[in-house]
Image (cartoon, rainbow, N blue to C red; front, side, top):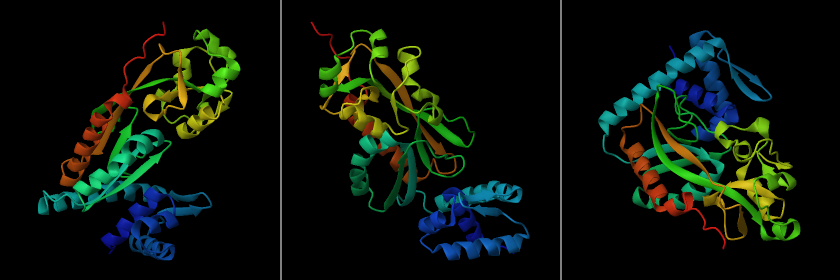
Length: 298
């Protein structure tokens, strides 16, 4: 007979992608993770994982177990909600994009901790999003509206983007007067085949066949390239400081953040507290997220 706690280790390993990652999440050593997984495989008489230099891969039996274990985990959490329906405590893992997570959510986390000292937050702010449906996270703030039936979704906030460059670049190259003029400038943007969301195809939305000469999968890296005179980029308005200048102020793109939560945790107290904090945070930063259109120069 297998031990439920071994299933918990199995889930941590599949979500982390490695024994070391699972060990870090669980607060145990990697050797213990390996032993527990081996014990689970012995109990179930199946090979569940294949280890490789790039991490661990699920076998067919492992994939079936992952689906069943995820359902079991949801049932266990439902029992916990019955026992402690109003306790704001425990861990909530949030996935958000690199820019939004670092510039909007991270500065507001101390206030959340002060309001709920028993709540532990894990913020995964990175290029790409983790999945509530796969139980990689509890809450996700994503660009594309999640479609999975296991995820409860609602709009969180719109935000605006514009074209920006440094004063040094504009002094050296001059400012474009039309969108067509952008083709004669150094453009900074995403690496096309590393885009993690179609909503990030900004350049095509501004001018057909507009291509970057300097690219990065990281919006923070793009910001640094622009800040150091590397060219013109489409950047979220909330990410830009006074060191950059708005170019072609009439050009403005709008995108939407969606709030997605696994249905098994959406009604517990800690998730509700995080939802309220997220909504209060974007409301407080509304002027940064969606500033009014700049006035045209006279």
